[in-house]
Length: 189
Image (tube, rainbow, N blue to C red; front, top):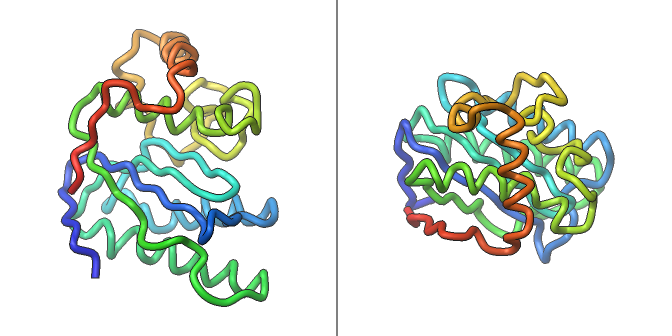
């Protein structure tokens, strides 16, 4: 049983990686299926997806919670349904993820802005692509205006910038800060 309490109206950085850092996405269809699970379980009455990035062996979600049951009503069914499907498809058994998902509450606007850039830059820092817009499995393309998706709710983050281009500049400048979230201290719930 998860001891962490979630609060409605708070932002959370939720992430996890594969057991022994192994892959969690094996085929192109797996990436899309995970996003379908996110869409299914992150219903508007429970949470808003602010940003996301799926990596070969881990995922990042930034969620705005609308419930104190974010763990049991959103994340647990999402992860369990995805794991069951992958285990069936890959003829494997046991856990897919290294343990329970991690969730850290974001307590300041500046943290949210830096965290969103951090999440979107993961594939660049991992050497998978040169620019964040080249990675299809993140919400960065929605933020940069290169895709009109309906999953991420970008307006809260983008409202802190005069334009999308200003946000793109912010992310570009942030690219050189890897690996730390500079000036960001998350409150562990």
